[in-house]
Length: 385
Image (tube, rainbow, N blue to C red):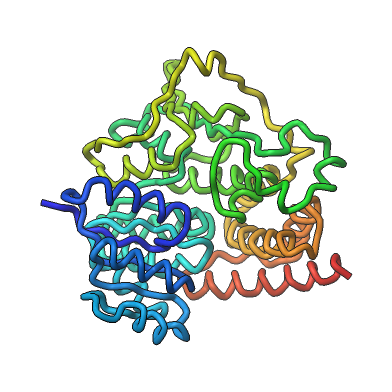
């Protein structure tokens, strides 16, 4: 029997990789719904190719355009947040690849319905980790981590238990500026920041890799997924991106998951879980790789790491405010309003200024998020001026 899947964020990089795997195994998957933020043409093409029965565009103003693009198909055109949440409740597996806090409510809707979620939206757990893990536990939902690092840990844990784990080791490529001084990084342009040496990713996550905020967000995500405190989660720079993360057990054993720098590997694991699926992904050639390097990260050159760990340890709304501030600051950098070094400085200013109150609901969280974004935009305007 084929697995019924909904792909939230089908037009993005993770969505495209998911579709590549799904279309290569047509008898194994039934795509019931696909969604996008605003790319009507690409969404309609995906819906027709996959035979999806529902296509949702987040921007309600584009519903008419989507309906026209789907004329003659058997796919229902829908729009808006409630439609996103509705399709998230109706699949066996939801691939949650919506970028940013726009994915919060659909992911929560899926978890509350007891649906298995392949989580590629790290902002969901960073901002609302406690709320989402509680919802998953209550409904018996399973969260499958799509990020290569957390997927690696998930695979290394075997039975999923951390009872005998000493620490988790998240590996980081170090991004395109790994060997540069702080002064050299400060002069880098958006085009240089998005040119990742190993991975093909969207602009926002590529900038996060360059600042290493991506690894800071993953630190917080790992805490929520696996239940270990900050002091038992380490970050190690590994420029080859072959070892995707490790688990160290109390007897001294370290299990590492290795694979090519291809997001289709962790996505395939989530799509087929608890089984495995065949893929045409190029295999590792260890003799060609020849060596694997590891080094400690530098929190002075990459202050985002320090900020993320501090936010995790502070609890409350700190991580949510940090994530919101980072999204706004990265967008401002990509738009040429602020410099590369201003990203972390702006995030730190927002963290220092905000009130740290724990959200009791997604609505509380979105209010905190909106306040942090507004504060960040004010600080960006001052820097830009």
